[in-house]
Each structure stands twice: as C-alpha cells, then as structure tokens.
Image (cartoon, rainbow, N blue to C red; front, side, top):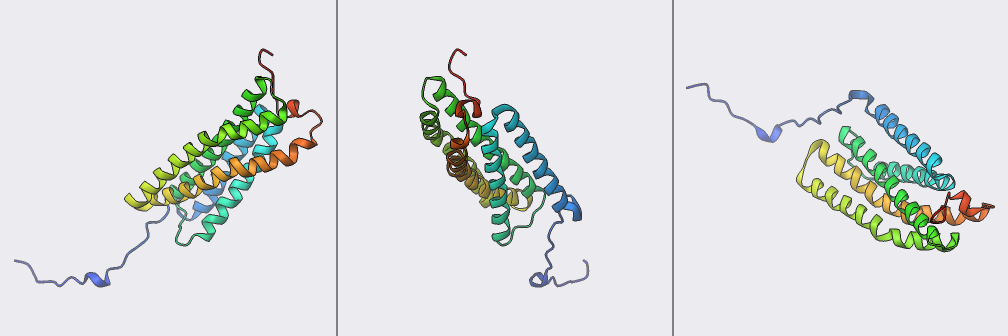
Length: 198
C-alpha cells in the first residue's frame, strides 16, 4: 500500500490553453485576415472590374461587422481556431459575391439589359448563397455543441461569419450595386459583362 491522500477536486484550478502563436496571436490574425482580404480585392479588381469595387466594399463591410460581432459576443478568446474560422468565413463571403456576378453575367449574356440582369442575377443567387451559408451555419452549430477548445472557437467565428456572409452578399452588395451602378457611364463595361458569342 501507499500513503493515503485525500484529493480535493472542488479546488481544482483550470487553465486556459494558450494560443498556438503565443502572445502574437492578435498580430498574426490581423496579418492573415488582411492578406486574405487584399488577395480577394486584387482578384475581384482584375477579374470583375467594376463589380470588384462593389465586392471590395462588401468584403470590407463583412470584416468590420465580423470584428464587431467578435468583440460584442462575450467569452470569445481568439486563438488559432478562431483565426481559421474568420479566414474560412471570409472565403465564404467572397464565394457568395462570385456566385452573384456569375449569375448577373449569365443573365446579361442571354440578352437582358444590365438593370434586368442585375435584378435577376441577385434573385437567382439567393438559393445558392443561402444554401452554402446555411450548410456552413449547421456545420458550425454541430461543431459548437460537439467540440471544445480550438475547434469550438472555430465554430463560433465561422458560424457568426456565415450569417454575416449571407447578409453581406444578398443585402450589402446589392445596396452597393444600386448606389454605384447608376454612376457608371457604360454599366455593362463597368461590370465587365459580355453578350453570348462575343
């Protein structure tokens, strides 16, 4: 036998696991998110011309709201999982914007006016964008309830981002489109739209 020892579990001390990047997590997070946004902005500007301006403003709005939500929601400690969640949500937001411009491009190629193509393009994008973000939200909720640690923080940041991503693509991007498009002298050229066969 050994010596008898009484364990006192009620006074057990719990420690938070430190972030994978140590004290520089906030700096590395900022660099990662800014790098991704800059790459997305560059891609949109080169590939989609004027819609790149709309997408850029929409992505900046997304990042501001995502950051505000992370500050507003209590108990979120930004760690590696949280950074990956923000990055994944940013990609989700960019994907929604790409779906919209593809739908607008398809409608214009079929012979619709720019105004009609934009209106129909946003309507046709609703279910694909909603489906993608809904799937992401369900996955985030599942992870939230079934996991702990880094994966749980990923689920929180990604889930919040999925909701914001949907509203950014379907409402904010449409608002920017409605505000910016009338200022363009040649709207089809501004959005880099082409008719079928050209």
